[in-house]
Image 1 (tube, protein in one colour):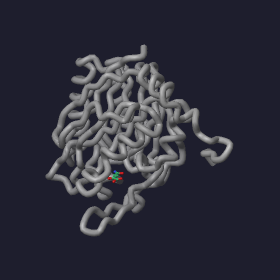
Image 2 (cartoon, protein in one colour):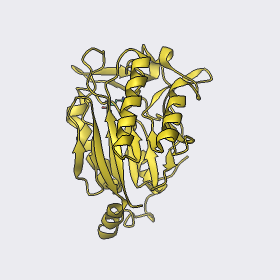
Image 3 (cartoon, protein in one colour):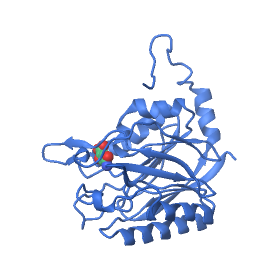
Image 4 (tube, helix red, strand yellow):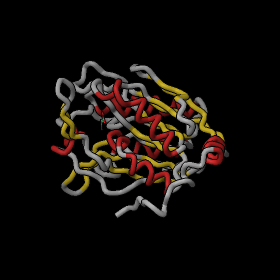
Length: 274
Ligand SMILES: NC(=O)CCC(=O)C(=O)O
């Protein structure tokens, strides 16, 4: 099926995990009831985006959060890109996206590869690496409609990663994210449009709603860009669900008419995984 409906849940994230899980469940159910075949949640949807919370909120897989996602995916028969959560694995914590298929099986898992360590004068300082470890793998999951590349927030700044997902077959890239009030207004839409345009993919980035009661103020503005680079949906900063139709024929049409991927000079340069 080349046309299908997706829902991007821009949910408000609070300091209580139970409330976050309840809210995610409500939004997932609402998305499915509206006919969405894919549902996307934001980065760290069960936990405020703040290093001090990650160790306490972290869960092993399977754990309460991923069990909830898996059973909702199965019950509602949806492909669920479950934002991300702090994942405890051995003695480390990762920022991990768990992806579930229509039967509730794990269809993929992405551990954020590029840790968000920045220090902008007069703006934001954040050092994920003080608590989190980096993932090592490029992630492309097989949804029934097409391969989907998944990476997390700061990962979207790295064109090589998105290109690798594209070369592995992704027609849609999904990014659970949480930009902030320094970099969001400056770079969010520009990056989403650029990654969509240079890879000729649908590019979907899901943010939390802005919560002024938490330490980190998310930019919001969850966004969907088509393979021509046009923004086809964008939220404001408030909680809500974006509904969008994805047309895979458009990916083929843009790639046929403007064959960027075919025009790469593979005889002169190469991009490879180590
Ligand atoms: N959670 C993140 O990785 C934030 C990334 C971000 O805000 C950026 O500017 O990049």
